[in-house]
Amino acid sequence: MKPTRRPPRLLLRTLAVTFATVATLLVAVFFAVTMTVRNQVRQAVVANLSSSQRMFSAMETRRQREMRAQATTIADSPTLLAAIDTIQIEARSRVAAANAGALETIDRELRKVASRVEADALVLVDARGATISSTGRFADRWPRGRAVTMLDRTDRGSFDGVTRVQDALFRLIAVPLELPDAEVGVLYVATALDRGYADELARMSGTKTAVLSDGLVVATTLNERQARQFEATVAAGRPTDGIVTLAGETHAFRHLFAVGDTVFYALSSVDESSRAALRDAMESLAVVGAVALILGLFGSFALARLLTEPIDRLSTSLAAMAAAHDAARPLPLTGSSREVDALTSTFNTLLASVAAAEAETEAAYTGAIRALATALDARDPYTAGHSDRVSVLSVAIGRSLGLPDDELEVLRLGALLHDIGKIGVPDRILMKPGPLTDDEFASIRQHPVLGARILRFVPFLSRHIPIVELHHERPDGRGYPLGLRGDDIPLAARIVHVADAYDAITSARAYRGARPPSAALHELWRAAGTEFHAEIVGALANALPGVTSDRGHEVLEHV
Image (cartoon, rainbow, N blue to C red; front, side, top):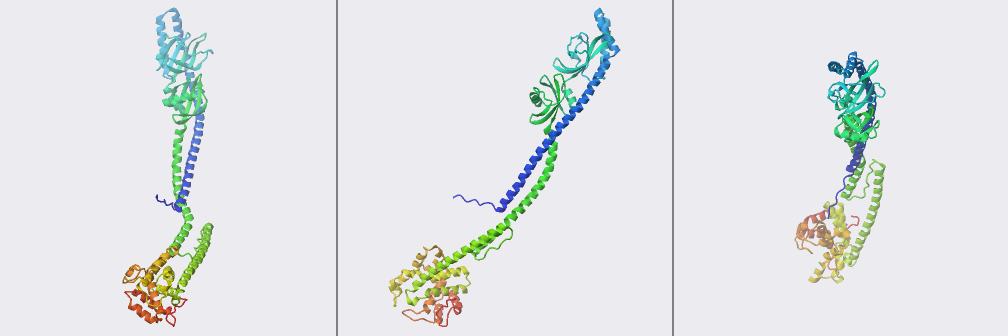
């Protein structure tokens, strides 16, 4: 059979529930604070991007204006214009020496300018679209003499655009080179749209950057995976701003500016920006949470004790009552709560009802026992009242020995029933005036066994069976029905044995008269140690002055 698991104590359950409630609230607070911080950081990131966009637009406008002004200054250089015009005139007249000198002049002038202009390449193109000269780290993309068509300048003025040269993308500022009567060429200031440009753009804007052209990310400070995801998400619609998840991180992005089909974006990681704020918030919340948990633990314990202490006191009182078998005294009210006091009052009322019912039941079965004993005594006028007298004498001996009240009660009823087995003995034997034969005496000796057999059918009389069955046992082992010796005989049976013998000696029988108490005691003392236990006889001698009348053998009913 599977053992029954003991349920936890109410204190532990109350503590667990209240502490779990506090912990759940703290988790909810942590979650709410986390979401609030993330939302606030997201709003701050978007606001910062907007601010960066405005600031960068102003800076980029100023930067482009400065570069255009520098390019215009170069384009207005008389030396450069004269050299270009010379080249074009000599090209028509096929004068190679003059042409070489003019080219050298142009190269020298461009190199001077390149040292002052932040550009990846300066490219000078003649009116026919052929490269005259180029300088800078990407000058090899524009070799001298190669025809180049980079921008369609229908307005014949300066132009800002993006073009692809070989495998690279460049942002160009175009400034015309003009003589009074005609345009002799164009000066291009080229900036490569590569990782270096993206880094510079990021430095200026204070954010991550991405440059999209023709639906592709051509330059960015994002990693490869993030760049591909940004390209797939943003390139098709080219939104001005929004939120996008890149490689598991949430990013806010915003359009910085556009040049033709090329769009420049600033991006900022919400997760990265919120990480520090969340860490600070979590550290603060951890301290608050730890304090709250400690306070919650103490508060939960205090609440649990407040709820369970009255119940514990009530439970302790009930356990003490059960251990003492004392159902007569009502439980005290705890005064801790109306509910517990109402429960206690209801229990006391129920207990009083049970006690009253038990008293009625006890009175009923005590009356039944007395009726049985009286019916038994009525069979023989010489033994009338014998069971009552033996019962009173037995209780008096028990009190002299200091037995507790519950054992005295068992002794009282057991003594009343000690001869109940004689119901099974025939009247001819039980009331025979003369000596008994061996067979008749053997029949008489069966009455303890018969009495025990009768009582076994009555559960509430089980404690009285040893008295009924063993009250004729002797210390020397010559008693019946089991032949027990000494202390093997139950104390109650020893007491009833002495009381039964005393009453038999002091009562009249058909074959002899009653003997006085002193003679009876003398007879008992004479047989002490063999037929009777000496300590029981001594207890009877001590108790007799309080239980006998002047006539010497009548037991007072009130004792």
